[in-house]
Length: 189
Image (cartoon, rainbow, N blue to C red; front, side):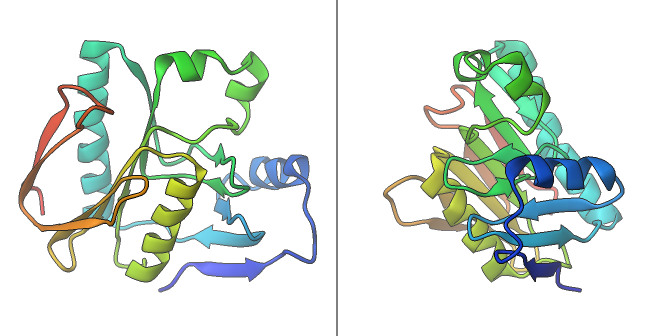
Protein backbone atom coordinates (compact mmCIF):
# COMPACT_ATOMS: atom_id res chain seq x y z
CA UNK A 1 0.00 0.00 0.00
CA UNK A 2 1.42 3.36 -1.03
CA UNK A 3 1.11 6.22 1.50
CA UNK A 4 -1.89 8.43 0.81
CA UNK A 5 -0.90 11.81 -0.61
CA UNK A 6 -3.22 14.75 -0.83
CA UNK A 7 -2.32 17.91 -2.70
CA UNK A 8 -3.42 20.58 -0.27
CA UNK A 9 -1.34 23.29 -1.91
CA UNK A 10 -4.58 25.13 -2.78
CA UNK A 11 -5.78 24.91 0.83
CA UNK A 12 -2.79 26.92 2.11
CA UNK A 13 -2.51 25.59 5.63
CA UNK A 14 -0.43 27.86 7.80
CA UNK A 15 2.33 26.30 9.87
CA UNK A 16 0.12 26.68 12.94
CA UNK A 17 -2.84 25.01 11.17
CA UNK A 18 -0.66 22.08 10.09
CA UNK A 19 0.69 21.78 13.62
CA UNK A 20 -2.86 21.79 15.02
CA UNK A 21 -3.98 19.19 12.44
CA UNK A 22 -1.21 16.89 13.66
CA UNK A 23 -1.97 17.52 17.34
CA UNK A 24 -5.71 16.96 16.80
CA UNK A 25 -5.05 13.65 15.00
CA UNK A 26 -2.37 11.87 17.06
CA UNK A 27 -3.33 8.50 15.62
CA UNK A 28 -2.17 9.67 12.17
CA UNK A 29 1.41 10.12 11.05
CA UNK A 30 1.36 13.20 8.83
CA UNK A 31 4.02 14.95 6.79
CA UNK A 32 3.92 17.84 4.36
CA UNK A 33 6.27 18.25 1.42
CA UNK A 34 7.87 21.56 0.50
CA UNK A 35 5.24 21.83 -2.26
CA UNK A 36 2.40 21.61 0.27
CA UNK A 37 1.41 18.02 -0.43
CA UNK A 38 0.02 16.33 2.68
CA UNK A 39 1.22 12.76 3.21
CA UNK A 40 -0.58 10.31 5.47
CA UNK A 41 2.00 7.67 6.35
CA UNK A 42 1.05 4.03 6.75
CA UNK A 43 2.06 2.27 9.94
CA UNK A 44 4.93 -0.16 9.49
CA UNK A 45 4.86 -3.88 10.18
CA UNK A 46 6.85 -5.78 12.77
CA UNK A 47 9.97 -6.34 10.67
CA UNK A 48 10.29 -2.68 9.66
CA UNK A 49 9.47 -1.45 13.15
CA UNK A 50 12.16 -3.64 14.66
CA UNK A 51 14.77 -2.61 12.08
CA UNK A 52 13.92 1.06 12.58
CA UNK A 53 14.25 0.72 16.35
CA UNK A 54 17.55 -1.19 16.18
CA UNK A 55 19.13 1.40 13.88
CA UNK A 56 17.95 4.23 16.13
CA UNK A 57 19.17 2.37 19.20
CA UNK A 58 22.70 2.12 17.80
CA UNK A 59 22.75 5.86 17.21
CA UNK A 60 21.21 6.56 20.62
CA UNK A 61 23.83 4.50 22.46
CA UNK A 62 26.64 6.28 20.58
CA UNK A 63 25.07 9.66 21.34
CA UNK A 64 24.59 8.86 25.03
CA UNK A 65 28.29 7.96 25.24
CA UNK A 66 29.50 11.05 23.38
CA UNK A 67 26.89 13.64 24.35
CA UNK A 68 27.43 15.37 21.00
CA UNK A 69 23.81 15.96 20.09
CA UNK A 70 20.19 14.89 20.25
CA UNK A 71 18.59 11.79 18.68
CA UNK A 72 14.95 11.85 17.52
CA UNK A 73 12.34 9.18 16.88
CA UNK A 74 10.16 8.91 13.76
CA UNK A 75 7.31 10.70 15.51
CA UNK A 76 9.28 13.97 15.48
CA UNK A 77 8.35 16.38 12.70
CA UNK A 78 10.97 18.90 11.62
CA UNK A 79 9.97 22.17 9.95
CA UNK A 80 12.65 22.12 7.26
CA UNK A 81 14.13 25.36 5.93
CA UNK A 82 13.07 24.26 2.44
CA UNK A 83 9.42 24.39 3.50
CA UNK A 84 8.56 20.75 4.19
CA UNK A 85 7.42 19.25 7.47
CA UNK A 86 9.15 15.86 7.64
CA UNK A 87 9.69 13.05 10.11
CA UNK A 88 12.71 10.86 9.36
CA UNK A 89 12.81 7.35 10.79
CA UNK A 90 15.83 8.47 12.86
CA UNK A 91 17.37 11.94 13.09
CA UNK A 92 20.31 13.54 14.89
CA UNK A 93 21.13 17.21 15.52
CA UNK A 94 24.45 18.51 16.81
CA UNK A 95 24.03 19.87 20.35
CA UNK A 96 24.95 23.52 19.76
CA UNK A 97 22.48 23.78 16.87
CA UNK A 98 19.72 22.25 19.02
CA UNK A 99 20.57 24.49 21.97
CA UNK A 100 20.32 27.56 19.71
CA UNK A 101 16.59 26.94 19.28
CA UNK A 102 14.18 28.58 21.69
CA UNK A 103 12.24 26.48 24.18
CA UNK A 104 9.07 27.03 22.14
CA UNK A 105 10.80 25.95 18.90
CA UNK A 106 12.05 22.78 20.58
CA UNK A 107 8.57 22.02 22.00
CA UNK A 108 6.73 22.24 18.67
CA UNK A 109 7.99 21.12 15.25
CA UNK A 110 11.63 22.25 15.44
CA UNK A 111 12.44 24.68 12.59
CA UNK A 112 15.72 23.02 11.71
CA UNK A 113 17.14 20.42 9.37
CA UNK A 114 18.78 17.54 11.20
CA UNK A 115 22.48 17.02 10.59
CA UNK A 116 21.88 13.31 9.99
CA UNK A 117 18.83 11.30 8.93
CA UNK A 118 18.06 7.65 8.37
CA UNK A 119 15.13 6.33 6.38
CA UNK A 120 14.17 2.67 6.22
CA UNK A 121 12.10 1.51 3.29
CA UNK A 122 9.16 -0.56 4.49
CA UNK A 123 6.90 -2.68 2.32
CA UNK A 124 4.47 0.24 1.98
CA UNK A 125 7.12 2.69 0.69
CA UNK A 126 8.12 3.24 -2.90
CA UNK A 127 11.85 3.69 -3.43
CA UNK A 128 11.33 6.76 -5.62
CA UNK A 129 9.26 8.52 -2.94
CA UNK A 130 11.96 7.94 -0.34
CA UNK A 131 14.71 9.05 -2.73
CA UNK A 132 12.78 12.29 -3.33
CA UNK A 133 12.45 12.72 0.42
CA UNK A 134 16.21 12.24 0.84
CA UNK A 135 16.80 14.90 -1.80
CA UNK A 136 14.46 17.25 0.06
CA UNK A 137 16.50 16.66 3.22
CA UNK A 138 19.74 17.54 1.42
CA UNK A 139 18.22 20.69 -0.09
CA UNK A 140 17.17 21.70 3.44
CA UNK A 141 20.66 21.32 4.93
CA UNK A 142 20.98 17.70 6.07
CA UNK A 143 24.67 16.81 6.00
CA UNK A 144 24.47 13.00 5.85
CA UNK A 145 21.62 10.63 5.05
CA UNK A 146 21.24 6.87 4.89
CA UNK A 147 18.38 5.22 3.02
CA UNK A 148 18.08 1.53 3.82
CA UNK A 149 16.39 -0.59 1.18
CA UNK A 150 16.07 -4.15 2.49
CA UNK A 151 13.94 -5.20 -0.49
CA UNK A 152 16.98 -4.77 -2.76
CA UNK A 153 19.54 -5.45 0.01
CA UNK A 154 21.09 -2.00 -0.46
CA UNK A 155 21.84 1.20 1.41
CA UNK A 156 22.07 4.59 -0.31
CA UNK A 157 24.36 7.24 1.20
CA UNK A 158 23.45 10.89 0.63
CA UNK A 159 25.83 13.85 1.09
CA UNK A 160 25.40 17.48 0.00
CA UNK A 161 26.74 18.32 -3.46
CA UNK A 162 27.69 14.71 -4.15
CA UNK A 163 26.19 11.86 -6.10
CA UNK A 164 24.52 9.29 -3.89
CA UNK A 165 26.53 6.12 -3.30
CA UNK A 166 24.84 2.71 -3.23
CA UNK A 167 26.28 -0.24 -1.32
CA UNK A 168 25.11 -3.83 -1.03
CA UNK A 169 24.10 -5.06 2.42
CA UNK A 170 25.45 -6.10 4.84
CA UNK A 171 27.74 -3.14 5.16
CA UNK A 172 29.58 -1.41 7.98
CA UNK A 173 28.75 2.28 7.95
CA UNK A 174 30.49 5.10 9.75
CA UNK A 175 29.17 8.50 10.72
CA UNK A 176 32.10 10.13 8.97
CA UNK A 177 32.87 13.62 10.32
CA UNK A 178 29.16 14.27 11.03
CA UNK A 179 28.93 11.55 13.72
CA UNK A 180 32.57 11.11 14.77
CA UNK A 181 33.29 7.60 16.02
CA UNK A 182 29.85 6.23 15.15
CA UNK A 183 29.92 2.89 13.37
CA UNK A 184 27.26 0.27 12.79
CA UNK A 185 27.30 -3.02 10.94
CA UNK A 186 24.14 -3.43 8.96
CA UNK A 187 23.65 -7.17 9.25
CA UNK A 188 20.06 -7.07 10.48
CA UNK A 189 18.64 -7.39 7.00
